[in-house]
Image (tube, rainbow, N blue to C red; front, side):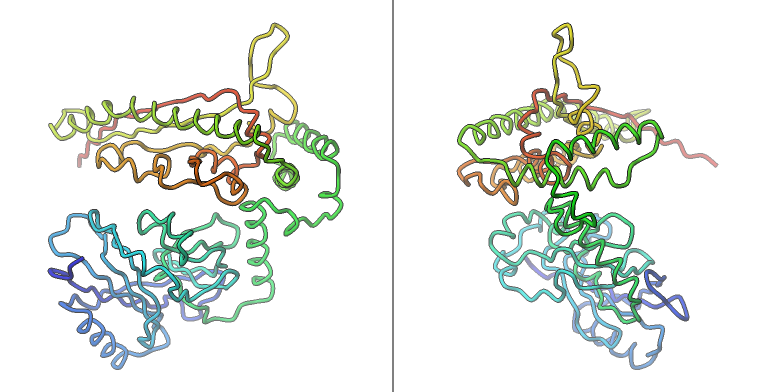
Length: 421
């Protein structure tokens, strides 16, 4: 990767509040200048600190950009610094198309500034929030094989009462304000709750020790009772997710990886692969035709959205012998609790840029036989769909093996934007 024709943008971050407090506060960004070298940008930063050092200084970024690049704010390298100019972190994967490749040796054994369970300040736009680190960037050969672009080279952090994030290391700063005992306790709970969801181990989180000691029959009866009660009240049962996670954990823990069960899973795995391949085959001419219309300045079509989706289900036989979705029992609850985003993907990006093999759904160099699925030999390719169901839903492996129907959908939305004064 060359460093010719690059510029270095120096950005200063400042506190907006006179007395910032956690869990979050506001900051502002100010561009100090654009320089022809990193050394000149760092020298300008030192001069800025010397002249204007104040209690409002939060930190600095120096972003390296390629000249004559049409990819907006895509940077080759981003670097972060503390308010005194001390180097903090830098990215090692370019955000620019065509420069995705990086020497993987840079990953191995590199220094990771924060570890799992650390509290960190995460900058996002004009907001800084105190969060807890759930996972760190990849440093081993096993982890690096899952790195496909710069989005995969970051931390996983958990804010208070919100979904997890995947910030680059340059957006993480050490805490510099007092942290209350209550906030520390609540962030630790976020960590433990997400551990439960991600790894399916309720031993970390269950406040009811007796719950995980119940038999499977008792547990499922409790789940069905709570589900019916929530339906009548037309409101969510906040504890239902915990019950379902404990059920999943118990079933996975007792699951036997017999040759027969492995064959069943591999057969289902192939069904998912075939579905995704058919969706891409169907989407390809549609995407290319619509993109051509846009390029040809179609009078209506300015843009379009296309979404591919697979919905797995466990069908049962009704009184007439017809196969249908269950209207009661644990299977109905499992299907009702499948997240909407599961098994969705956008074919547009991969078809237009002809890089479908880099998609996590199709890259057969990237098998997802990890965590609960690590008993599957590396000789077999496990697709991302199986991983999603196993690790991002409340379905256990025995539930997944009951799947007997895959419903596929390709949804296209034509878009027109007419601006007027």
